[in-house]
Structures are given as C-alpha cells and as structure tokens.
Image 1: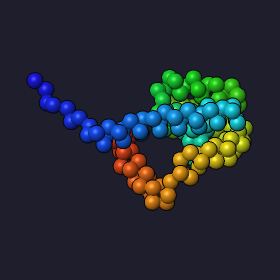
Image 2: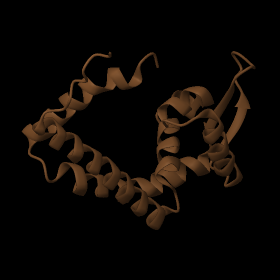
Image 3: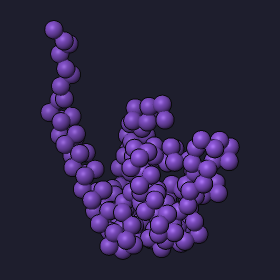
Length: 154
C-alpha cells in the first residue's frame, strides 16, 4: 500500500484555491485588454516582449518555448502567425544550423511599444495598486521561491 498523501491543510487549500482563481482571472483579463487594445493575444505579447529583452531581439525557438510555457509545435504555429503579420522572422541559428531563431522585426518592436502602455497600466491596476509595498515584496519573495521547482532543468 502506498504512502498517505500529504493533504493540504484548510489554510493551504484556501490559499491554493485563491491562487488558481487569480491565475485564471488575471490571464483572462490581461488577454482581453491586449486583444481589445492591440489585437495581440496574451501569449503573442509575451513572446514579443521576451524577444525584445534579448540581445539583437533574437532567441532560439526551443528557448522561447520554455519562456512561453508552450510546446515547440504550438509555438511554431504562433511564430508563423506573427511572421505572416511581419512582427517576427525566422532564421537558422548561425552557431548551430540545427536550431531556428526567432527575431523580432522593427514592426514587431513597434507593435510591442504601442501595446505596452495599456498593458502595463492594466497590470498595475490589477496586481500592484491593491498591494502595499510590503505585500509586493512578500509576493516577489514567494514567487521567487516557487520558480526553481517550476523551471526544473530549464
């Protein structure tokens, strides 16, 4: 017979349910705002933002898939849509031709810059404005502690 599961305490269960609800609602709210204001999906915005943070606005698709929490095949479809809109382009990795790089185009960067103010304002309103400075620091510390277990070997 297996070992007894470590069931959540009532307080842990309440925290877990709240976290689940916040994650679902926050992603939905931010996605709606981005779609309404800039015709970008939540994932499209964060792929463009991830590329914009990189040297030469370039990243291997395999690494971008980790950043986007997406399977490579799904990300490839998304990159194709962004490519068709002129927001990114793909090129073989010059260091290793077995890999493909995604590159943020000037039009993609301009689209990101145009979308960012409204998105940041919505993030501020939904996430940071309701919290005190102490709450924000505690949230950052808690999320930082969770990341290693979620990233694994990434």
